[in-house]
Amino acid sequence: MFDILNDFTARPALFAGFDTAALWADPHVAQQMLKLHLAPEHGIASRRHAEIDAMCRWIDAEIGLAGTRLTDLGCGPGLYARRFHAAGTRVTGLDLSAPSLAHAREVACPEGRFVEGDYLHDPLPEADVVTLIYGDVCAMPEAARHRLFGRVRETLPPGGRFVLDAFPPAGFDAREEGAEIGRRLGDGFWAAGDYVGLRATFLYPEALAALDRYLIVEPERQREVFAWLQYLAPARLAAELEACGFESGPARDAVTGAPWEGGERPYALVARAR
Ligand SMILES: C[S@@+](CC[C@H](N)C(=O)[O-])C[C@H]1O[C@@H](n2cnc3c(N)ncnc32)[C@H](O)[C@@H]1O
View 1 (cartoon, rainbow, N blue to C red):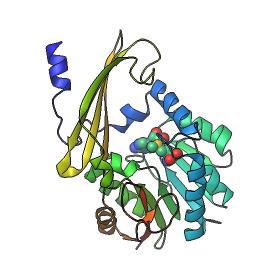
View 2: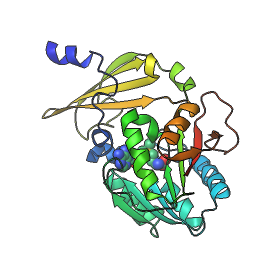
View 3: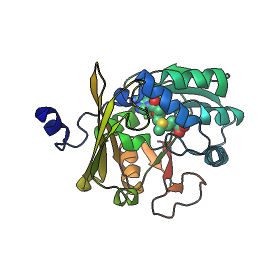
């Protein structure tokens, strides 16, 4: 017991244990994530649905989606895909979560193509526009971001666009270190039956990163989940995109598309493939 708790409360190295499948592809957790996505007034897993409407409107006005091929990376249950399709684009969604993809195919956007896969490793389809929405770019280490940007660049023709949003550094100031323990921590989010959940939050001020580390102990199994978030300044993200073959436009408010005014609100960049 001492070894388990001693290990759990020790600060991991930055981005240690990075494993998107552990967070997103566990069948029970994926169902819970889907429920969160589909709650129209809930902003945890996806934006509130009225904000998704607004975001899709400005992306369409900026790029002109009609007649394009669009790949939505981490498409979730197809909330954006549906709106992109309505704007006249041919959508392919890629995601790790089988329940979210089923919802996308059967309910949200039967006209779209939805593929189960890992956008960090699996082949990406050719496209004119690629989207990566709701801060996914903040959840991965810099090396993975660079690899992904390079791979996205290869799927686009010159002039193709890559739209992505991110959480800015001011969000980091609101984070605190701490720990909690609870029977069925998170109201059954982590497993269907009995379990005890522990969460320890670690901050990495030098990298503006935070880790929520979970230990989920069920009667017959025990697992850890690492949820990383790095808060990224627009200039840094733009420079990383530039290094991977893109020209980045100015930061915009992710929801409205207006010039980004700083603070905690997420921003979006529309990067053009060189
Ligand atoms: C924060 S949710 C956002 C979903 C959607 N973009 C939205 O805003 O409604 C992140 C999504 O990305 C998916 N995801 C995370 N890492 C992934 C990866 N490496 N490859 C494919 N999908 C991934 C998750 O399964 C989840 O559906």
